[in-house]
Amino acid sequence: MQPGYTPIYKIMKGGIDITDRFNDRTTEIQVDLKGGGGDSDTCKITVDDRDWKIATVEVGAKLEVYLGFKETWLAQMGIFQVGTVDYVIMPKQIEIVGNSVGFTGAIKAPAIKNFENKKLGDVLNEIGALKGASVYVDPEFRDIELPFVNQTSSPLHLLHELERRFGAVAKFENDRLVFAKRDEGESTEGSETPVIELRPWHISKGFVRHTDRSQFDGVKVGWFDKDHVKQYAEVEDPNASKEADGTTQQDFYLSKQLGRSEAEAKMMAKSQMAMLKRAQGEAHLTLAKGYPWIRDQMRTLLRGFRSEVNGSYVIDTVTHTFTKEPGIVTEILAKPPGTGEDYEGLDEGAFLRLGRQLPSLESVEAGKAPVVPEPIDKPDASGAASPVVVDTTPVNV
Image 1 (tube, rainbow, N blue to C red):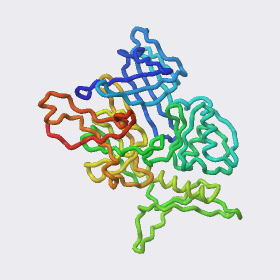
Image 2 (cartoon, rainbow, N blue to C red; image 1 turned 45 degrees about the horizontal axis):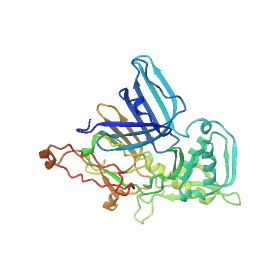
Image 3 (tube, rainbow, N blue to C red; image 1 turned 180 degrees about the horizontal axis):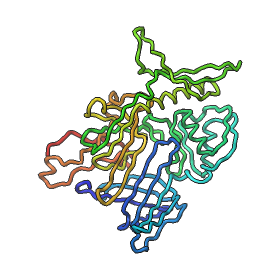
Image 4 (cartoon, rainbow, N blue to C red; image 1 turned 90 degrees about the horizontal axis):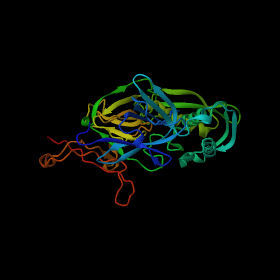
C-alpha cells in the first residue's frame, strides 16, 4: 500500500451515494478501460457475503464508480450497467459485473439496415439513439459522406467496422457514444491530453515486446473508378527504409478491403498503416504505485530504460484494481502510436510527470508523509481541470 495513503472508492447509483452498502465488505474492484476495438469498458465488484446480509445491486442498474485516496481525491472510472450478478457459494461472496452503459441489448442484436447517402455523423447518431446515448463525433469524421453502407449484423459490429475503416476509437463512455481520432492525444471531449512520462522507478514489473510481423513500407487499398477499373490508393510509411536514390523498397501491404471511392480508399490505407505500426510491439507495465487517473488512449513516453524499451506508446488498455491490501494497482497495455510520432521531441510543457511518491529530505526530517503524484484532472482555483506537472528528480533517502 502507498505509505500514508488510504485507498478508497465511491459508488453512485442514480445520483445517490450507495458506497455504504459495500463498505467493509468490498474485497476488490477491478476496472478495465479499453481503447475501442469492439470492446467495452468493464467493472467487476467483489463483496464478502459471509452472513448473506449484503444488499445487492439488481441487474440493469447503472453504477458510477470512483477510485482514489482518502488523503487526496477520487478519479471517476465511468458509468457501468450491471450485466451479471453471481452469488458464489464458497467462499461466500457476490460478484457484480458491469459494462459501459450502451454496450448491451439492442446494440448487440443482429439487424439488417441500409444507410445510403448519409454522413458518418448521422449514422453514428442513429446507433447512439438505439441506447438513448448522446453522441460525440470528432469534426474530422462528422461530415464524411457514406454513399452506401449495408448493415447485415449488429449495430455494434457496424460501429467496429467504421472504427477500423476510418482509423478511429469508437466506444461507449459515461452514457455517451464517442467516435474520436485514435493515437492523436485528444480526450473524448476533443481537448489535448498530456503525455505521461514513465521512468524506471515508476514501474514494478513488466516487459516490452518487439515483433517484425508488420514491417511494411506502405499500404495499398483498392477501389473501382467510374469505368469499373480497379485502382489502388497508396499510403507510404514516412519512416520506411530508403534506397540510395531516396526511394523506398516498395514492400507494400495489399489490403483485402475495398474503398467505395478514391478518398475512402486513401483513408482506409492510412488506417491500415496505423494498425500495422501498432502491431510492431507492445508494452506490458505494472506501476509501482497505483495511479487511477490514467486512462486508455493516453500517450506515454518511456525514458531511462535500455534503448529497446525507451520510446513512445499509446495506452490501449489500463486496469485499475482496488483492494484494501496492497491498495490500488495500475496495469497498462500500451502499443506504438499509429501516427509514428516520437513524443521525445515534444515541448516540455506537454508532459505530465508522475511523482516518485518518495519523501524529500526536508519532509523526512519533518516526519511528513510522501507526496502522492498529482492527478491529471486536479481542479485549479477556478474549479476547472488543468494538467499538473510534478517533479520526478530522483531523491536519495
